[in-house]
Amino acid sequence: MMRSALACAFALIPLAAPAQEPTPNALYLDGDLAIDVRPDGDAVISWRTLEPTPPGTVSYGGCPADADIAQPRYRWNSTNLDADSGPSTAHSVSIELTDLEDEHTDIGRYAANGGGTVEIQLEAWSPRFNQAQLFPARFAYRRDAGGTYRRVPAITIGPVVDCVTERSAIISWETDLPARGQVILAPLDGAGEVITETTQGVVRGAEIEIGGLPPGTRCNYTVQLIDPADDTALPGRELSFTTAPRAGSNTPFAFAFMSDSRAGVGDPMVRVERVNYTTVRRLMAESLRQGADLMLFAGDLVSGYTASRRDFVNQLNAWREAAMPVSGLMPIYEGMGNHEALGPSREDNPNRIGRSHTGSDAPEAVFSEAFVNPSNGPAAEADGAPMYGETAYSFDWGNAHFVSVNSNYWWDSQPGREGGGNREGFVMGGQLAWLDQNLRDARSRGQRHLFVYTHEPTFPTGGHLGDGMYWRGRNEEVNRMRDEFVRICSSNGVLAVLHGDEHNYSRTLITSDMPTSMEGASEETTASTAVRPMWQIISGGAGAPFYSQDFDAPWLEHVRSFSPQYHFVLFEVEGDHVRLRAISDTGQVLDEADLTAELGE
Ligand SMILES: [Fe+2]
Image (tube, rainbow, N blue to C red; front, side, top):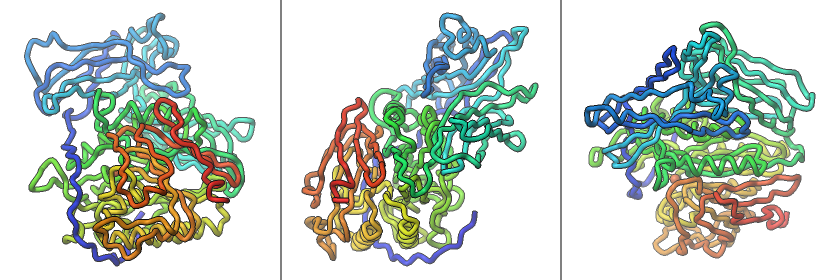
């Protein structure tokens, strides 16, 4: 949808960008995997690499049919080690689908269903990075009554549930081959009718909005693809989600918050296409177990900073795959971080980019294509600036209101140059005005608890004093912007601003007497502009390389809790109360607080 452009009211002062960790173009495969299912039950998986590589190995298996959170379990390996030539750019291996149907290992009901979705994972060596690379993927097959095998369409990403409201939800998915699909949805407790929605025409990607649902109700649903060969509905996994409670109601609910799942360091599973699969999957599953009804994810999903759109899309798709066990069971509201950057390589260093693209190649545009989020955000800030798209938006849930602010909009390492945009962490005037009005509107609707989440921390506590919304207090434009952001949030009674970027956990109480000035700073004010106390929760522990606490922060005395562990934060909202628990990837409770009681509310 086109929106009108607003003039940019800021004259941005150039300041050297902090050194970014180089994340060169991560492309390894030359195109997609090719999969050929032979009538006898062999499947040949072929791929091409951009540089000659040793042979690879394909692991294969399925998801246990009884798993409520379905993750792939691999059981067999196949490799082409007997290839007689050395490193090559063309590779293939053969796997046996009959393995899946064996009575001793058939965990996915392949024999009874006459086929199903096969989970595969390519493991291959990258001479460029001198590391093994993993590429998870999937395809589906059917075996007819005569025992003949053939390939059928499979859901490769999804089903995903998003934009859940009191009465509606959006179900989306992507397939490897064109196919019609249908959603069959049944609200539980006899609260509603069974709803069936079918895609219009044959598609490879579908987004279906289901309306007419009862508020605060568990809904079961299944997505079935239609086999184009005989119009048969293929089996789909049964999933469920809960619709939002009525706006303003005191129905208890819980939400999870986390950020920063870009590639970690170590085994290949922590850096699958620049995503820490291991950690983000574990934290997402645990947040569901702990009762979260929805999740906020505030940026740095992937390592990004790439000059290749295909690489950027691959990375975002890897995150979508990592989230798949949970993203069909609760809505995840994603926001952009500084690492979600896509633009031309710098002339002085082709492994880095200097600014983000605009238009349809803008990271905001690609991000909005990859994820389904509300599209009720602000207008583009200027002619030629990117659209905010689905990176800045808001929604109600029960008696709470959530706003996603994009603090990495129109990123440029040298802000102020011709046609350029913003330094990391800078929130432009149009978005700030939108945020202020949005929060006022939520208050006037009677929403009790207001949360603003954005990647860049207002007051960094470990790793990012030199950027975020602080930049060591040395940039007056940034100082004024941050002061305004704090004033807007606190004057509208925001309970907590939620951030990522720093790969750790911290809880800080922002008050009007909290010192904000450090040596060398050029701030007009030396204390925060909070007109009433407000929490800052930083949760950037979903898998990116860790940071320790920074004891130079002027607000050190206001930092109530800190941990460098991988973690997520669970917020439990019950009437007038909001309680928080930060939970590590091993289940350790890192912090517990009654946020409302501690503010005397
Ligand atoms: Fe970041």
